[in-house]
Length: 555
Image 1 (cartoon, rainbow, N blue to C red):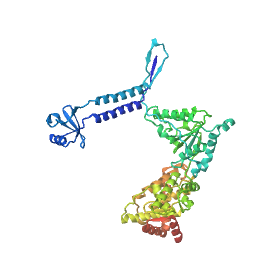
Image 2 (image 1 turned 180 degrees about the vertical axis):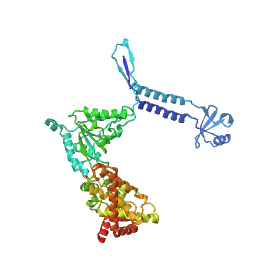
Image 3 (image 1 turned 135 degrees about the vertical axis):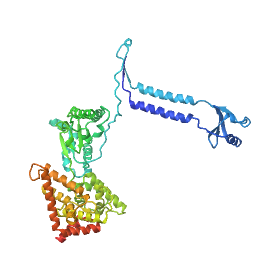
């Protein structure tokens, strides 16, 4: 008889030991001597007042079970015989050990059963040649995960602003619904679809919508869940995921943040990560075109992903999910506002939310609704959105306390930015004394004059301060940093310097030119700048509509 010893599940062993410890504590609580010691006077009072319900002796003590005080004890040597003459004092029954051995007998039986369930017996040899073979004991395993599918309830009708993406995925949905149509034509669907885009644009919701529209099981895993401290466990999780999907085919596997496990292999050894990535590559090669499995993955940064994952036959279809345009933001807002009473021009809200992703728009609508309820109003209005927009974008900030001199500098600094943003017609809703929400350039392709307009806005506060005071404050560091980043991108990435070949000198020359031009423009329109200062000093904010009206009135 060959007996093959299998690895004993560490979780079962821990469970048995934990149960034993709990039972020990329970037995200790039951069997320990819990009676409070009393004096002779107290014992006499209890006996004379007929408070004793039961009396027993054990190990030199006499125990009294009383009506009000529970169990108490007194040394038997202290009790005079005449005091207890009318009491029936029984010897204590020692049944505690019986319970003790009974509990541990149960533990031992459970342990033996769990151990036996891990043994395999094979009657391959004659009885006379009975041998025992023990395989190598495996390393301790991390808890295995039960991979289960979920039924997605998200539909494309629940997601706004994804028209282009939806068209790309219609083929995948049709394939999952009617795979024979494609097989008979000799065509195959991509094994992997990679959704690429910034956070919050709805990549996970899109994958769920594909599964719901196709009416197939949806297997969700995060790329980070494959990164394990146990050697081999990441690869095991990948194998379990694909095995479960094959059993439920047709199905969709969605791996979020796949770059966590699929980063480029650049020579630095990480056996666990590489083993997990290799298993993922093998699984994607291993399932057949007719298996009915489609792998959808999402990443915020495709540049860090390993080339082996991106080659044809794996993630060979890439869909870029960008920040929503104005019309797409309007469609998204319509979805979120359909059940909220409102008196709004949704197109106007869409225009003031340049740079918002789907998640930010959802948060914006929710914050506006909550503010409306706090103010006991019955409809959400534009004022509610304006009040919470900065909170959604930047978080709630505590307004800094400014001295009179600091306030004068801040008013002048922000007035310069108001002038530049209004003059170059950049998107902003309002600029306050402490912050602004001028959206950086996001549209592609970006034209040179558009980027330069943004750089001038970030330099305008510094220029305005120098015209009035001959210096500027340290709070210009953020604007200066953004301006430098944009200038660097123009020279080194976009070839928009004085020559195609980038250089540090070109960066400095471009920055100096834009700063000088902004200073000259502000000096010519000091009257408008001063008017903006007056408004900011009085109200501590100015809207774009008021800024444009003020500028047009003076010009």
